[in-house]
Length: 125
Image (cartoon, rainbow, N blue to C red; front, side):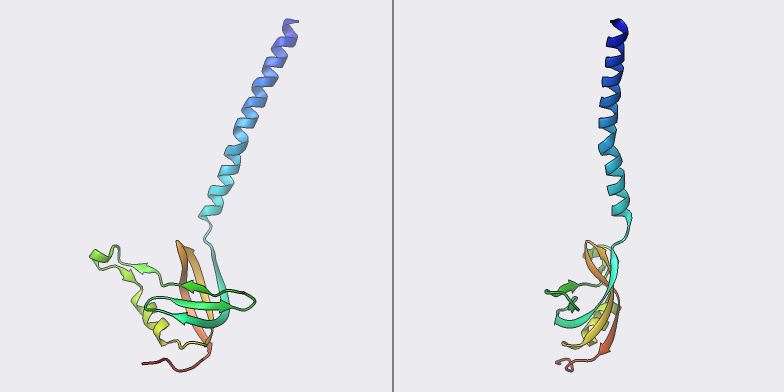
């Protein structure tokens, strides 16, 4: 009888330990997934532009997505701001142009590289 109680107690402790460790294993996978950089390439048409962003409607997508340059130089008070070279490049690209854009996700989709495949209307000055 004592042996049976001991066996049940050991089995119960083993079950509690196994169940307690299961979520921890799932959290490790989530942490690994967060470490992977989300990135990609889209080909589509420029549908909108601003001072430091461009909106591209990718082939096969219903809605356009806004892409911004990487932030360089720290806080704005310390001289930081959007990557100046990429901002200048985005300003050169006219609306309705067909582009291939490489992006990474850091807080929001950010432009890594952009290539004009077919120029649209000339930019307004």
